[in-house]
Length: 130
Image (cartoon, rainbow, N blue to C red):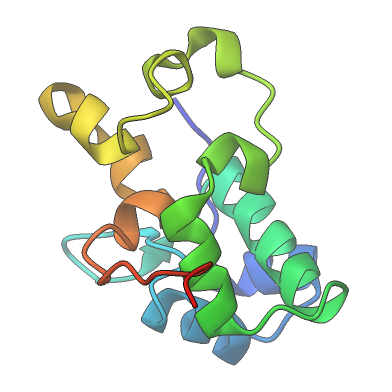
């Protein structure tokens, strides 16, 4: 069973305020699991990694949240989050199809918490068009 953390512990681990973490969730960059009884957010080690990388991309590399959402629509998740398990990934083996299409028959909680999956309904934009 995966270790789960509450937002207070996550906040201390990633050195961000709870408000900032909730903002990332509101913007569609995170989707922590929720306890059906209390509605508390429960974070996994993958969520911790994603929060750190999102914060890194915003504060060290200067991406805006809007820019990051565009990146998540166009770049493979393994590039954004430096995934080390690409050999096991059906999406990695089929890179020209969006992850949520490849995984539609096997959508599990891991896919549903992926920022790429969360941003799938965003309207695509033409980036390199004059």
